[in-house]
Image (cartoon, rainbow, N blue to C red; front, top):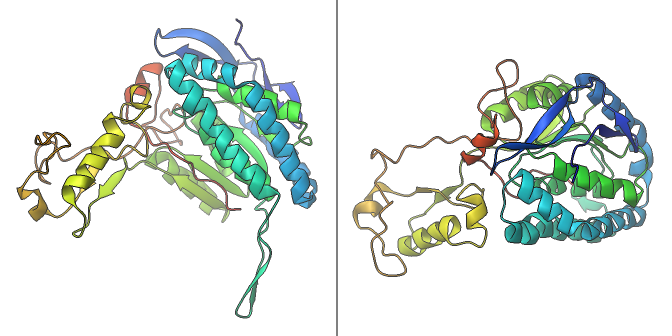
Length: 364
């Protein structure tokens, strides 16, 4: 099966990228190259943002019921591709096929369905004191997503943005771009108006930087490392643009004084070691509460596990193993230069901890 992709998706059409260069996509199990995708450039970002800007007024003015209908058609198109999505995620990410089917392909459909329902019933303007609260689309949204949930993280940004009437330019992780291509096959089939959704694959230092710094991008939604999020916030601040950042921090679990310590530790341990998706994530998810914080005095006695044995990993704060790196890996290959370093730079780097989760979506 030929998985190579040669085009990017701009203004409702598959078109040739400007550079002619490509990026390799690896199977993390074998480290073999399984496909190539175009390496986008700032010129491609310019074209994508221009298309999104031109489409914004029309999409924002589209009746909510019509936007909901378009999202519903996207749901149907993705449902028809669910098996292909699961196989692709298993190939480019390494998720076991059973988990990829249930979680990597299934969860985004659930998220999208919720926004189909919400898009058709937007909240009415509300009066608060002497003020009128009206919810309006932000504008052009630049979405930069990580590799660990290559469809769910995209959907967590794309679906609310489209439901609200925003237009979108997406840069998926270059480590797992093939799943995004399947999404855009479905978007093309669903018949979204030209320019409403655009795809520019590429690296963080090139495409990510261009999106974050673009003067016509009204909001940047990013999930990934703290270092990269800091850079994006800086670029957005120069033009007073909005940002939504879900950054590294490795899932701190704060146990308050009135909480049952034994129950809290058991619960946190379960998210790391006994969930259905443990073989695929091995603790690398935002819901995997790998870092526990409580008062020092509460560590004098170790809480029992479900079987009554002591938990060997619980150590007082300040002990040799209590300090750990806090930042995650992020969504793109980072190289020295303006774009921060520290993110995944090769298939082998998928073994590092990284943030994930529902994603930082544009406000609705």
